[in-house]
Amino acid sequence: MGRLHEGVISVEDLKDILPPKERLEKGPVAIIECIESIPCDPCSLVCKQGAIIKPSISTPPRVDYDKCIGCGACVPICPGLAIFMVDYTYSEDKGLVYLPYEFTPLPEKGEEVIALNREGKEVGMAEVVKVITYPDKTSVVCIAVDKDLVMEVRFFRRKENGEKG
Ligand code: SF4
Ligand code: SF4
Image (cartoon, rainbow, N blue to C red):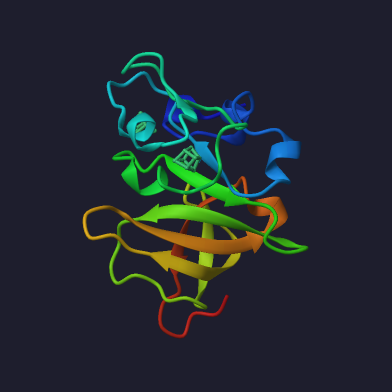
């Protein structure tokens, strides 16, 4: 059972809006985890493909997975940090998760970090593959995780001095 009533979104809460397996196998795609009816729309305005559907300003957004090209433009734009991008085509056993990241200092490419799920629980290790910064937007960090964790990992923390993975 989902824990939305506790403020935690689960994969079960999202099951009707996640991309089908066939789309995931084609390459990067946005995952929007915004299911509350709040008046907000920068996500739909930033998507040049018209892939973010929002019939009214208070309707939760939905992604048209046939239109989404995985450009990533929507990830840093969400004030609620509710947009991610995943890519199952990265390697045989690893997939990528692109996360909005507001902490500083930023991690470095190649750094090993601790992958956290939506509840903030440690679920495994991850490698920082890319760090994307903008002058006026939230940074985006791309991490590689085991494929079976791609839909679970939604944050990470840096290792503390001397901490082993
Ligand atoms: S990743 Fe790009 S194409 Fe896909 S929904 Fe976001 S802005 Fe639109
Ligand atoms: S920008 Fe973020 S919080 Fe606002 S509607 Fe889009 S996904 Fe939801």
